[in-house]
Every structure is written in structure tokens, then in C-alpha cells.
Amino acid sequence: MKKASIKDIAKQIGVSATTVSIVLNGQGKERKISDRIIAEISKVADQLNYRPNQFAKGLRTGKTHTLGLIVDDISNFFFGHLARVVEEEANKLGYTVMFCSSENNEGKARNALGSLLEKQMDGLIIAPTSGMLPEIEKLGKEKKPLVLIDRYFPHVPGSYVTIDNFKGAYDSVAHLVKQGYRSIALVTNETSQLQLGDRLEGYTAALTKHKLSFQPRLVKQIPFGSTEQKTIKEIESFVKAHPSIDAILFTSNNIGIPGLESLRNLRKQVPADIAIVCFDDNDLFRLASPGITVVSQPIKAIGKKALDILLTQIEGKQTGPTHVVLKPNLVVRDSTPGKSWFKTFPVV
Image (cartoon, rainbow, N blue to C red; front, side, top):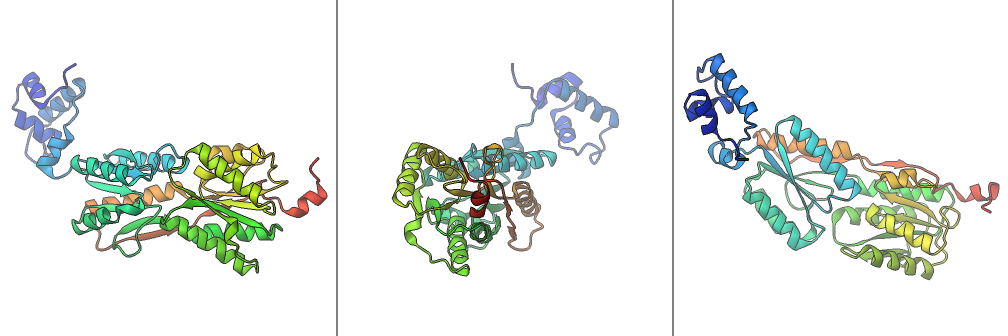
């Protein structure tokens, strides 16, 4: 079926295309068009299922009412739910959101950004890869409405919304120590991304605070982009090589889930053999038996804050960069019951 145009609406009513355009742009009363004509145009537009050409509209008004969102992986629980929050909140305000996944790949990230810019997005929300620094700096110089999420570049002026990643890791390790665990490993991704660096620092700081020595051998870094099967094998080899490990902090669910599969393959019981804490919550961790202790990120607050800041920029009301650091929440479940628990309730 042919897409309805402004000319189709004008022909059916018997008015000029200019009059239809004025009404559909919400300027009918301002331009002294009668209430009857405004109502008639609105009615026929609905009947014909008219949809404006946002690109053409953007050329006329400078606004397309579309926003771009670039994340690592839209299928990831954290980013998928974040995208949904942004989309729902943006739709309430008349904006459409276009999503892109970078898969933490520099080439894909740049291509995604270029594609969104070509489509005349009014603003962008980006979880940047490490190599996107030049593009982010360029967007800043061009005054393009932009908010970074999940991670940012410390020396680049600009707005961002993130969580206190240091605190999330620190609280996790402090909880494990309190529960009696002493050989606590960290499994993370091999990357220069700020948020994972902060999680590593929180892990080491908590060990030091509780008089446990930091042992580099108990930190396993897995390259970004590794397949799930490769990640599983890497974690299996790591755990087998360090039989003293009694607890593991996984720094994201994209390695926490393969981590649980690795332990199952090794016939390691959680928590009888190894206690588990993972950054990011999801249904699997909540419904698993035992339930997995997690560092839960305030996804709704991150999405709403990022969108609020972006719209403030789009409307020209922001006077300087806005930095928002939200607090994570440690959700304690059965994967970290404490060593004393097994003395009272031994696993058979």
C-alpha cells in the first residue's frame, strides 16, 4: 500500500498542502486556521494512517524527534532492560529511539555512530568502547547533544550517567569476607574500560582493608569478544589451576553465566564448594537454585537520568556537563551463605 502523503490529505479535504502541513506541525491555531479545518485534517490523517517523514521534517525544523542509543549488546540483560526504559520514557515525550549494538567492537561502534548521525538524530546516548575517544571528543566540540552511560572518559568534558563501580565491588568482597571466605577470586574482562577498572580497584581495596593480601594469580581476565564456549573453558582452567578458591566475584553477567556453567562442568557445588557474587542481576540469577548474590544496578534510574539530561541538552537548557553517579545495591541470596553455615547444615 502506498504511504499517505500531505498532498493526499489536502486533496481529500480540498485545502492546500501548506495548510495541512501547518496543522500537522501543531501551528494551526497560531496561523488562525479554523477549528473545523484542523479537526478535519486530523481526522483524515488518522484515517489514512499518515506518518510524517522525520528526515524531511528535520531538514525544515532542525529536529527529527529521534534519538540514537548505542550499547554493547542489546540482548544483554542490563543493556536490553536499559534500552526498554529509554524507549518507553522517550515515547511518552514524542521521541523515537533507534538502537545499535557495538558488541564492544571498535569498527561496529564507529559504523553504528556514523549511521545514526546520517539519520539526523536529535541526540545520542552511548556506552562507548575504549577506542571511541576521538569520536566522542569530536561530538563534544560540535556541541552534539550526548550522554555517555555505564562508562565515560575522565579527561573529556561531557555528561554521563554511571554507577559507583568501586563501591559495588568493594561491598561484594566485604560481604564475602564477613561470611568467612578468604581465597576470593575475581573473573573479569581484559579491557581498559573505566567501569571494569573501577571494579578491580574496589576488589583490591576491600582485600587490603580486611587484611587479605591481593594475589594477582586470583584475577582472571578474559578477552572481550571471546565466544561463550571459550569463556567457559578459560574459567574451567582457571578454577582447576587454583583449588584454594572459595569464592568468586564475576564483574558482569556476560561472564557470570558462563562461569556458573564452568563450575557445573567441574562438578563444583555453589555455594558448598565456591561462593558466587556477580555484577548485574537477571532472571536466571534470581530464579536459580541457589539464588545468586548480585550487585544490582538501578537500570530504571540510569535510563531516566540519561534521557532527562539528553533532552535538557536538546532543548538548549543545559549550562554545563552533568555527572551522575548512582549507588548499586548488593542483593544477598543463597550463593553466599557463609562458611559457618556448612558446619551447621552440612551438604550431603
